[in-house]
Image 1: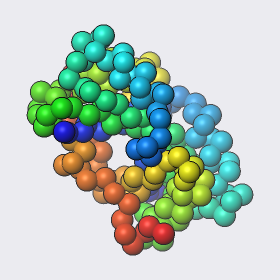
Image 2 (image 1 turned 45 degrees about the vertical axis):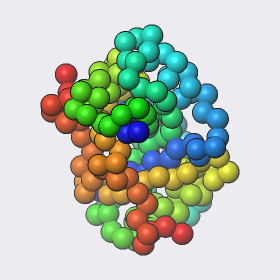
Image 3 (image 1 turned 180 degrees about the vertical axis):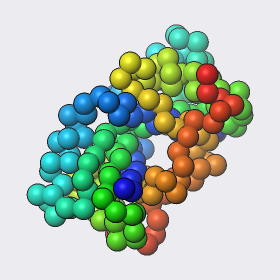
Length: 94
Length: 94
């Protein structure tokens, strides 16, 4: 059972009201170090077998054709989730 | 100018209607290899200086307190965007 992670972000030139709202809230909540925020989407696609190059290629096509709107969004990551090992580092976790 | 990436996903036991909708659409559009989809959020937080351990720790706190709802979501990644080098591999890109 493999998983592919696909990340999609609004293009840099596209206004991002959700990100702006978060960026406005952070300083009021004590997080003054962050000067700008962009908000996008993360998808985890599960396949029955292992994540082969063919699965990654299919995920990249799905990312462009289904998971993102190419007019306003960029696909910024297509990867085997087990290979990239996303994590919250222990030293920064609560 | 550093950037921290924060990824947030619905907890496994939480129903994810957006992911279910995508999972239902993919086979109809020719992507039958994906058996399940979960949809979450990706944030890119920009700081004026470099991404220090203090910045990462602040981002982790912001992720728990502002960017996610701990009742229904997990923070699955807090990382220096330049260090992790998210990308769409050339061999899977169009």
